[in-house]
Length: 229
Image (cartoon, rainbow, N blue to C red; front, side, top):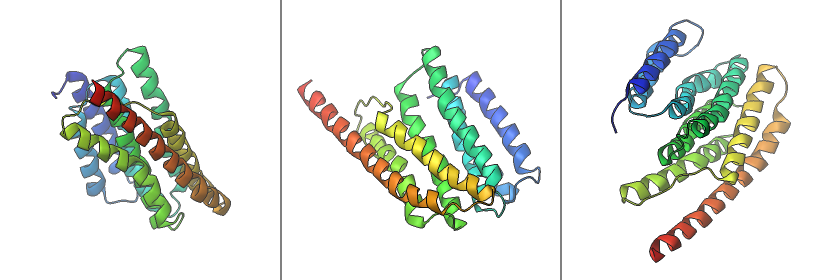
């Protein structure tokens, strides 16, 4: 995969915006660590083709403020804004891909990876702040990492895989953002998020299990189709 002018331009824009935030004093984390993450994502993003995929990649950049604000005392309001922006990119990237006829297997594989990075960073940060239990953060992270790892194994084995969104996957992603982001919002408003956390402890594992079952069914059907071909 090669770099393109559009990808390089997008990386430059992201780096400028990210470094301005990292060194503005508006965030409590060490600027060098935050900057390192932004530059690393930008270096990889220079090889990501397509406007829609660059919008998707925004959630990987937003993982830095998600983690920082989730861990920082008093940072939950800013975290809620970060979650809202991430959710917006999740809606916009698919629309752009469809309208520009740029939907691809690569984009379908990239989406859950950056979702996992963002939700995982937010979940681990909230866990460190004592807002949610460790096991719930790990379940939310596993929801994305396990399918991504399975897809990577198939690709390395030179299997032709058509990465697509599934209904259960889209629902679980929405629930993760709403529930975990809702915990951040309530904390930011100095409201008790206990009931929402209890709901998340039920809904997120169930939605994750449903996603895994659905993916296993699709993988089995794909394997049967491939073996007959």
